[in-house]
Length: 168
Length: 291
Ligand SMILES: Cc1cc2nc3c(=O)[nH]c(=O)nc-3n(C[C@H](O)[C@H](O)[C@H](O)COP(=O)(O)OP(=O)(O)OC[C@H]3O[C@@H](n4cnc5c(N)ncnc54)[C@H](O)[C@@H]3O)c2cc1C
Ligand code: FES
Ligand code: FES
Image (cartoon, rainbow over all chains, first blue to last red; front, side, top):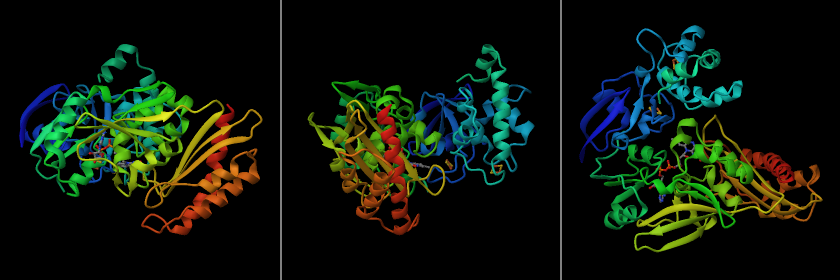
C-alpha cells in the first residue's frame, strides 16, 4: 500500500514513504510543500493548472501517480526564476500582462516551458501550444502577446544562456 | 475524488514480466499506460484496480518502424510521437492528423495509441483513423501465445474492446499504402481539445490518370463505435474525383451512417457535419494521393 520513493523537484531530492494512490500533484504540493502547482478540475484532467515538466515533457500532475515519478526529475513553477532574475517566459508575462488572478499561470508557464525550447511562431501555433490550460480571466490575447515576447527573448539567448534557462 | 487504495504497484521493464504479472493478478489488475483515461476513471471510482501494472518502463514497447511492408507502432507510442514521426507524416498522414487532434499537448505527451484503442471511446480520434488504414492489433497473452485482430473487430462498443484480463496489446500494425495513396482526418468538437462530435477519416488510392481505385471512409463520433461509410466509398471507386462526386459522397455518407442525440450535439447536426466533412476530407486525401 505504501512505497518509498524519491523525486527530484527543481534539483532537490524529496524522499518519502507514500500511499501508492497518491497523485503526483499532491506529492509536489503536500510532501515537497511546493504549492505553486495548482489543482483546478482535479478529476478529469482538463484544466491544466497542475501542469509540471516531467523529464522534459509538460504533463498534468493530477493524471500521474507519485510512484510513477520515482527517480524522475520534475520542474515546477518554483524552479523557473534564478535568484532575482525572472525566466524569459515569466518576464514575457510580466511585460505583457499575461495574467490576472494567476490561478492558471503556473500550469501555463510550465506548458510553455516545453514549447519555448523549440518555439513556433504563428498565433495559431502559440494558441495550440497552450490549449491544454484553461484561463478564465484573460481571454488569452495578452497571453499570446506574452509568449511572443518570450519567444523573442529566448531567440536572443546565447547557447550557454539557453542551457541555463532550460536545464531539462 | 481520489483513486481507491492501490494494494500493489509494479513497474516491470520487459514484456515477459508484464505477462507474468497479468497471469498472477488477472482480474484485479489494470495496465497503466498514459493514464489519460484510466486515471480519471480511477478518481471517479469507475475503475478500482487493486494492482497497477505500469507499462511506462517497458522500453521495447514504444518504437515506430516499417517492416515487411507494414508500419509497426509500439503500444506505448505517445500521441505526440505519432503526430510528428517522419515515416508517419510521409506515408500515413491521416494517422498523424488524428494524433495531432487528440486533446492538448500535455495529453499527447502521455497518452498512447494502444491505450486509446483499448479504451474504445466512440468519439476518440484513433479508432476511425486506424480503421480507415485497415490496422490490426497484436495481442500477447500470459500463456505465451499471441493473436492478431483487425481493429474493426477489436472495437466492440462504447468503452468496450476485445481484450482479455490476461492480455497485453504489444503493437499496432498497418499495411503500407501502395503508390499514389493518401489519407486525411478531420474532426469537429465543441471546444479545442475535446472529443469529436463527428470525425471523418479517409484513405484514397488513385491511378495515374486521377481515377479513384480504392477508397475507405470511416465516420467517428457515432454510436456504438466508428462506422464505415461503405456506400460513399463505393461511389468513388472507378471514377475521377470531382466536385459533384464529392458532394454525392457526402450525401451518401450522411444517409448511411446512423447518428444519435447526446449532450454534445443532436443527431441532425451530426448528419449535417457528415455531409460537409466527408467531401472536405476526401478532397484532401485525394490531393495527398497525387503528391
Ligand atoms: C482532458 C483530456 C482530453 C482528451 N481528449 C481526447 C481527444 O480529443 N481525443 C481522443 O481520442 N482522446 C482524448 N483523450 C483520451 C486520451 O487520448 C487517452 O490518452 C487515451 O484514451 C488512453 O490512452 P492512455 O495511454 O492514456 O491509456 P490509459 O489511460 O493508461 O489506459 C486506458 C485503458 O487501456 C488499457 N491499456 C493501456 N495500454 C494497454 C495495452 N498496451 N494493452 C492492453 N490494455 C492497455 C488500460 O488498462 C486501461 O483500461 C483525452 C483525455 C483527457 C484527459
Ligand atoms: S487539476 Fe485540472 S488538469 Fe490537473
Ligand atoms: S489569470 Fe485567472 S485563470 Fe488565468
